[in-house]
Every structure is written in structure tokens, then in C-alpha cells.
Length: 354
Image: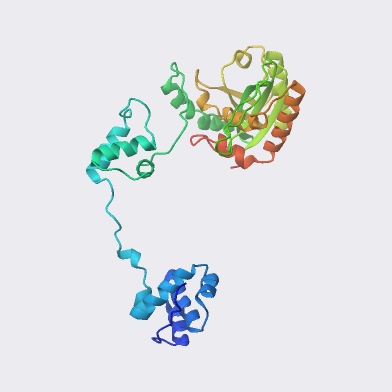
């Protein structure tokens, strides 16, 4: 048990209060306040509770105040350089160069592999988490790469990103009174075979998910306005030209597309999108993505959100699928901020009244 500690009578309670009021530094003011409360015969535990600090913190302050008056309360971390870093500047540059290639074993870099590299470089055992710390310090984060088709035309993709703004201006120059919104559209197949997702589970107990081996599915048509997070959904039995025409007509009616409300609709080049038999409602302006460019399609980002409803579940009938997906889509309509966060790319333009 720690022995009681007495407060040296350097300053009176009133003088301590005046010193705290005159102090501009919030942390220093808290420390002086702690000493003031101790001078009022508060016990150390009560002072700690009042200031949200530990009893040991208060006790250390009292000892420093007793030895050095108020000077002993100053934050000594400011002059403390800390220990020398594990890697010097030359080591860091060498690590950056190493991380640009394959790991020494020919595989992918990881925290333990960086730690092994540091150990070999310095000739002594590196800290348990030093690999992770240096990866983060150098600006790395663990990410899932986005796939890109080998036949994708990167120049065409960059040119596409610059098309939408001028198209908005062209429409407004022809119909000055019109508002223009930019939406994107895609379809996803959702069936009885469930999506498997990582989940939090107790260590030592790997989750198991039953799978249905049936090959039945529905198609979800999703329309999204990335700038606001607004969405429109249709759950339909197939994808073809007549069904796509139904989806377009429903969407145009839902958003009020007209001569004075124009919709630029970004979509891929699927056959049922580009067919001459597609009926484009009044006010809808299709804008097709370059070939092999799903990474430019904001609507692609909708599907992971929707499929959370069927992830890791054993589903026996399409009716169950439909019920789950409908409930999920209804919920997503109510959270446009989440939709916008997933679908509004950095290059996506503002539109409408924004």
C-alpha cells in the first residue's frame, strides 16, 4: 500500500487558483487544478476521479510539485526525443525500394516479412509489431486490389471521365430551363447460391455456411445517383431487351424524367442496353462506358451492399431470396449517405441543383 504523501506549502489554495486561471495551456491548467484540489484536503483518488485521471498520475504530480513547485508540473515530453528509431533514413529508403518489388521469398509483403527484413538489415531481432508499424509509417494500408480487364483501354477510360461535365453543359445550352442529373445503372444476378463473407467470430471456431446447390436466380436492376445517394430498384426475372425497357420506363417515371428534367444515364455496353429495339424514355440520355471498364461503373458498388442480406445464409427458395433482397433495398433507400459514400467517385461531377 502506498504511503500518504503531504503537499509542500509552496502556494496557498487561492494562489493556485489564480495560477490555473492565468494559464493558457489546458493540460498545465489541469495539473495545477489537481494540486489545488489536493491543497483542499481532497484525497488523491477523489482528485483523479474529478479530473478523469489515475490516482498514480495525481501522486506523481504532487511529488514533482513538492520538489520543484509549479515548474515541476510542466510537460516533460516536449523535451524528450524518445528512443532512436529502429531504421535510419538510409534504411527507410532501402525498405521503400524493397517494398516496390516482391518479398524475399517471392510472395507478397506482410508485417512479419517486413519485420524479418528489418531483422536481417539491422542484425538484431526487430520488435514484434515493427513490420506493421513501418508499413503504416510509409503510407501503406492493407487493401484488396481492384481487378482490371487486360483489354481495357486506359486512354478511353480517362477520356470518359471528362465526358460527363461537357454533356451536362451541352444539354443546358439546348434546354436552358432543364435540370440535369447524372445516374448510373447496372444489373446483378442474385440466386440461391449464397455469397460468403468474412464475419467476426470467436477464435478457434470457424463459421460454417450451408450452401444450396440450386441454379435459380433473379435479377436486380439498380439505378443510382452518386452525387446524392438516391437509388431506384427493380427485381425482375431476367435480363433482355423487353425487360430492360420495362426497367427504363419505371425509372423514368420514378425520377420524373421529361423535357425539363434530363437524366444522363451511365451504363455498360451489354447487348440489351445498346440494341436498336431499346425504347429510351423522354429525358433519358444514355452514356455508355468504354469496353471492359466495370471499375468506372458506380452502380457496381451497390451489389456488395445488397448481397449482405443473403451472405452466409442457407436459402431454399427464390421467394426467400426475393423477400430478403426487397427488405434490404428498402433499407438502402433510407441511407443515401452510405450509398453516396460507396458510389461517388472522385472524378464524378456535381449535377442538378448542387
